[in-house]
Image 1: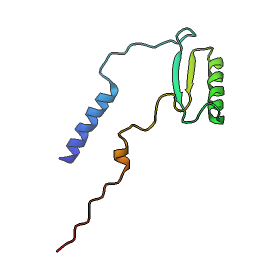
Image 2: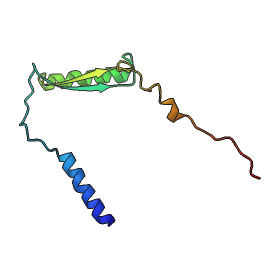
Image 3: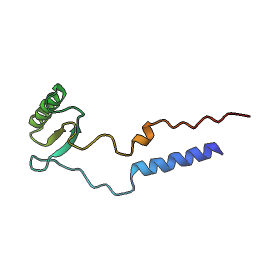
Image 4: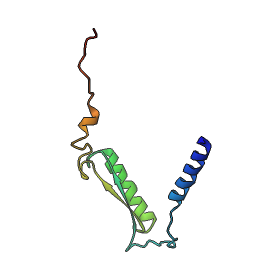
Length: 101
């Protein structure tokens, strides 16, 4: 029974990952309509990591003639990394000790 369940689950997941739509054809990217990747860092603009990522972004832009653009976003520009309600999952809940009789 378990084997049949896992085979059905595998087939459903393969179908879902394969997509149900029709193939749209190949996209071509130009300098006017580039392929844009967003790379978010946890460090600020003054760090070596940001400067290195910016240099890689510039080189990729040059080597692809502007068809691929990597947008480097420094830390904190996309908002806080910790949600206000996430403290609930970070705290440890303990029950009061009840003596046994």
